[in-house]
Length: 541
Ligand SMILES: Nc1ncnc2c1ncn2[C@@H]1O[C@H](COP(=O)(O)OP(=O)(O)O)[C@@H](O)[C@H]1O
Ligand SMILES: O=P(O)(O)OC[C@H](O)[C@H](O)CO
Image (cartoon, rainbow, N blue to C red; front, side, top):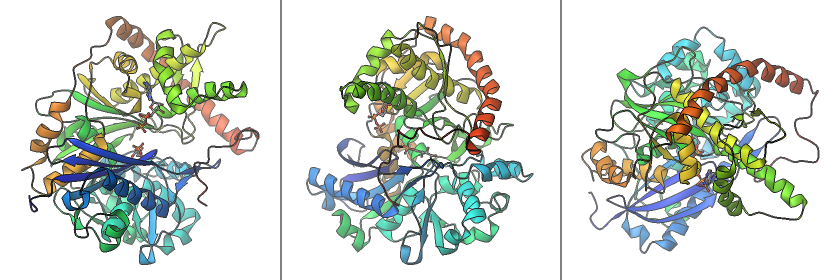
């Protein structure tokens, strides 16, 4: 290590719901966490945006709060590593000032542009290079949409960043992105560089100047600037590591790749669902439909083969909110933690496979294993006997069905072991359902903050605390993997029999969603009932 006496690594994970800063010792033991809620706004036109300045203020706050929890944090910090929510567009202009609010991965405004680009003959070549299907959440699609609709925004921009890149810029003054976002958006996962074919297929050759330098955080760090030191309470000159996108560093921390584990896969069941396995680049399977992501891992020559459900726990929140809205009409208020506590009870009361639920609750539709902005959630099989616990159970089963749909589309065998992380995997009952639907034994990690840990692991490798990532995994990840939880064979059979119906129904519903979207666009149906306002997490515009 370059600096003896510096015995703490700080990982920042700037997520969609929460921004966290976590302190670890050099062997990966968690010391303390500080967090603040993230703020973003959604609008009826599909917009989902957040303020760049506020994101930096929130991030700096978590670092100061962490400093209040860890004695002598500033002097002891060997490095800071930053990861964050992926996709989206964070435009920065002159003097490193934001050009506008950031478009998030949840933003659906680029849907028409995605359809146009998908229809172009160049799209397959783009997919073969990036390994990534185009969806409205991708920065490439969003910038192509801006180029067609609001080119003045791009004219004012000097660089197009992602969330973690913006925080890296605020921490170090360096405009950069990492190999994972660069290659799945505009590049080639094999070379981890930008690719002319991919950029041209998006129609963005003329805007190429917006793409920043690619920095591999396992090899290169930059120093914390004096301004950032003043804002965060850390010392100027502290090395800062630009982490890969949160999806793969979370998977790294949660055990996507450990020595000798054959057939292991990793699912993050958070706001969004990310289902993936670590493969050698030569073994990546590029499907005929051109969907999914291939995201470089911070391990040489390896990528995560990913299929993603746009919404995972957002569906659980929706069904819980439904109950809470009704209860509050009758004067009963349930706090968010009260609601979550009832999940297990309702899950036990609900009848297995009483209904089918398609968890496409996001306004942006679905992105894996099929891309359809018009896709919408639905229950199938309601009867007069259907009760609330049945619905709650169907929602969690639906997350499992969507997960199985994703793994089935990846090519090769279904997972031999499913390593789970994210809010919905906290309880054994929910894990039991998810494992039984996918038909795989489940394992969770004792690691509480997998995303921040994965970023900190990159800093540990960059500083030379480990000879390579494999050695770091052996100390930070493998020992924390919990017992194997075997799913109930009877449940597995019930779900295996129901799964073809789940797929058949979602295929059959596609023209219905299309027609509904047409009607909505024609103004026939109001987007939201006038009495119900959308969740405005914070008014930033
Ligand atoms: N026991 C559970 N079973 C199923 N879903 C859960 C459970 N606990 C939490 N969740 C879901 O996970 C979401 C996020 O949970 P939480 O862990 O509090 O947040 P985060 O993942 O952002 O840290 C909750 O809003 C809920 O939808
Ligand atoms: O912020 P979270 O939900 O942890 O991660 C979001 C992903 O990076 C996003 O779904 C990428 O499109």
